[in-house]
Length: 293
Ligand code: UTP
Image (cartoon, rainbow, N blue to C red; front, side):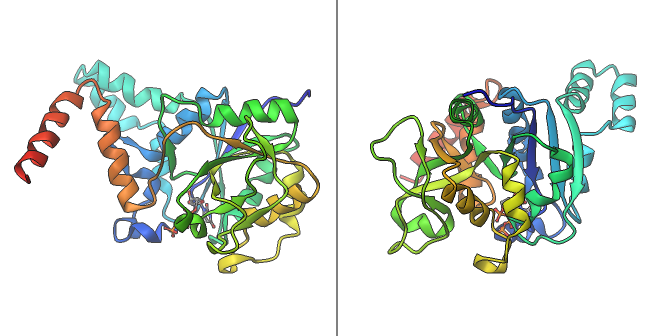
């Protein structure tokens, strides 16, 4: 199946982050660090690893720190240069050159479906990747690139899925289970935040998508859904009805960094993998656990 290449990624970061108050009162949750790199940079780097060079961030009020992070920091660069801190200077400058960045604003956080629609004019008439700005995957395994492969094979829109504990299905969009399990499968049912009793399976959509331009037609016709928000899932359900939606499992560990416990786990695991910190941190954790008996 021949399909257009995926050149652009949309990353919505306009949500209020209420699960992470009080820190999100005056700063974006997407700027919280995993060790020393903000969550949003991990997400951008995942898109780049999948071959994408153009990043469209959907921002909102109070999210300027994200734009500043990917922009030139003139005073800082000048100071580092004058002090001869070449390594730090290169690190700071490299962030600006990671990709081409564009920003669109979502005036009000009316839901993920609405946020994606805000990016329509920047995306244009081509398929694109959608990455949620607070979902992070282990960098050693393929996440978005697994979906790109499924899109290239089917030409359809693709949702990245993982199995979740049955008692957590009401936090996610849930798709029908595969029959039998393959590298990907056709979605005929997708439901936003179903109760355990009516969920079609325990396969949850987890923050990574490849969407064809057809999604915008369905987004334009959306009515408010669960939580009175414009739900991307409702537009995906229209694609599913047309036989145009594929589910692809993501073979990588995921952290929802908008959730406090998952954020702490992500920091521990990313720190343990660091060459400069991992051993010392491991010893600290081991001693701490031993001291607690
Ligand atoms: P979440 O539901 O995880 O983000 O949306 P939230 O609304 O900020 O979180 P809580 O529940 O209040 O803690 C997933 C992603 O979609 C973006 C968010 O910024 C997040 O990255 N989003 C969500 C938008 O850009 N606009 C919206 O209207 C809603």
